[in-house]
Image (cartoon, rainbow, N blue to C red; front, side, top):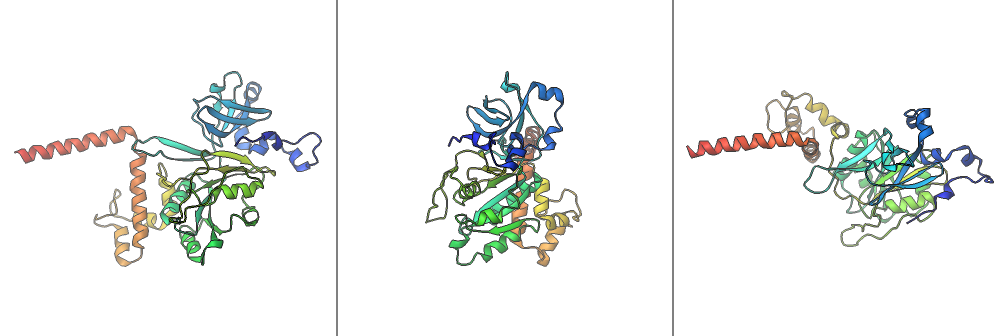
Amino acid sequence: MTRDYSQLWPSKGSDDLQKRKRSQLEILGWKPFFSQQLTLDDLAAASPVRVTEVHRTGLHVLGEGIDAIVPPGLDATVGDWLLYDANQPTHSRLLERTSLFERRAAGTGRKRQLIAANVDTVFIVSSCNRDFNVARLERYVAMAFEAEVTPVILLTKADLCDDPAPYVDAARAISNRVTVEALNALSDEPNDRLAPWCKPGQTVAFLGSSGVGKSTLVNTLLNESVADTAAIRDDDSKGRHTTSRRQLHFSPDGCAVLDTPGMRELQLTDVEAGIADVFSDLADLASQCRFRDCQHDSEPGCAVQAALARGDIEPSRYARWHKLAAEERFNSASLTERKAGDKSLRKVIRSIQKKNKK
């Protein structure tokens, strides 16, 4: 959907004093963190712009009197700030980010996919139905912790559930650092319940699988239908992809709202610290193991296995942590490390084959 962004900027005769006090850049989310990266010479030669959409044809950017497309070439994503060079757009400079969400792209490669940048709060959305999945929520929370972004879990369709309490309890058990809100996305609840995070100058993002109500929440916050919505399938509670691309919208009071396509698969990469934050109890135990490189499987002196044997750790929670930690190590390995590991493995295999022949 193409939107007329001119409505974001206050007109000369506007009576909205608060909006008039904020510049166009402030409405887009400009902060001192970004201005500190620029010199007077930078500002004389180029202008700050924010990436609001990523297309095959390039990056859609907005700034002070600027609404343009930057051709492909820059390694930028939605939410990024650029120092825009109008004469040579592909030479525009990417400014340092306050935060970055990324994942390993689908498939067998190790390529990373940028999701969003410069986000202050991420709303991790799930439904009070068969879509609810603790392991998936833990992945999103780990990614948020790694990016040093405030995570808030939103449980939608609570009004369609006989008792949302078990879903709320399971979500709260993930981390005591995460706020959990159960709400009806079709009501006026989101405006009031999410207000503490949706203040002027803030950037919020909605992440979650398809059909959980992300686009509905975006429309509610913006008080207009800027994102398409569709009903979920009755047989498995799974949703249809209605959002086809990541797009940054702006509320009348100056909050940037990012809607994203549903992500049923979230392969993490470079989130070791985030996983440790989500599973802080297990990370503390792991530090007590006899061997520093303990894999917490069958090694002697493993503090994690000892806690499992005593019943101090829930086996399913341990299994999720162990799987995430192994996935993180695999996905974060550089190409050089992977090649070296494969080469060493081939040497071992050849050595065993030679011994067997003898």
